[in-house]
Amino acid sequence: MKKSVRLSIAAVCSVALLGGVSSCKKDKTEPTCRINTASTITSAGNSLLTLSYLSDGRLSSVTSTGVTSFNRTFTYSGNMINIIDRDTTGAVTATYDVTLNAQGNVNSAITKNATGAIQSSMSMIYDGNNRLQYLISSGTTGTDTTKVIVAEGNVTSTIANSDISVFSYYHDKYFMDGDYLKFIQMLNFGALYVVNRNLLKSIATNTTTTNIAYEFDNAGKIVKATVGDTTNMQTINYTYQCN
Figure 1 (cartoon, helix red, strand yellow):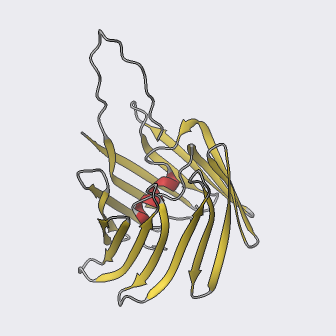
Figure 2 (tube, rainbow, N blue to C red):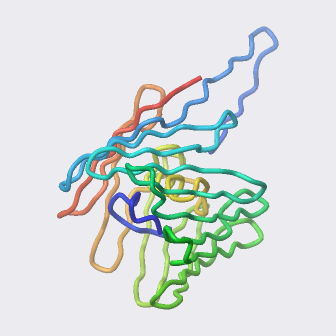
């Protein structure tokens, strides 16, 4: 879904550290930081994504300029997210209706064209611990079911027809803003359906392996992600707004 935002791969696809505070010390309030720009560099050209948020931290809009130009807005009502894509003239090019489950994860998503006709749909099936088990996608070519295998809090593999994808992780890093899979999900849905424990390192599908390498600032935030295989690479540079 949302071909305008997919950066290069399609994949099925926080930990709060609580410490005791001594009574002789003042509580320290950590700033809240959110990604506000993501510049992407690929062989096809460069784009700049600018993200804005509501006061409660939910994504409000994404504007892209450069080789890919569009504006995407997010409107929330109960357990629904309505997403509208517009081109540089302001004309609607597509809409997306996203439904969330009780835990706030994506339950389903319907893609419509500019005239409102349904183009495709996705639905997610979770287990009792809210871990994704199946992803069912329907479109003009039929319906596909992807089985999702989770171990130790991470999606370790997915099986879709004859395609098997295997995922690996940086086990010394937690799932955080700037993680490639988390970033793509937020851009596409404004919410998550895969919530891993650790930071995504690679995705191997059949004979192709996509590797993801990260760079961090002094505060531990991801400021750069390099994504790709031996023939196709892209770089994503993140900046944050903290308050």
